[in-house]
Length: 118
Image (cartoon, rainbow, N blue to C red; front, side):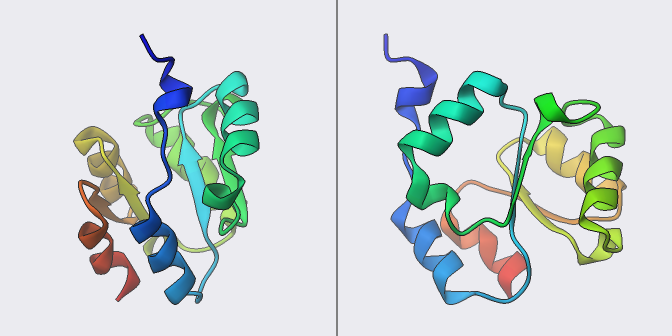
């Protein structure tokens, strides 16, 4: 069995999309814990490089989809919820983000991000 951290692969299409759309601040918002944070950032620096903010829930008050953690990230970013774009592969996490006033899409492929990048 391959450990989950070793199964992570950065998607060149997503990295390219981020490079083309340089406007606005970017962040990673994940439920991963301290070990994953350390290993992922070390193993995949190119995947994390485009992001100014790294929100690992183990450092926050709760995990997705708890509304409290979306409110905390909103406060940390110091922007209105409607200015936050969010993509996640979990429908429950997307629903929670939408309920908190974020612009959110369910991620299945890089094309899903078009709704957030304009």
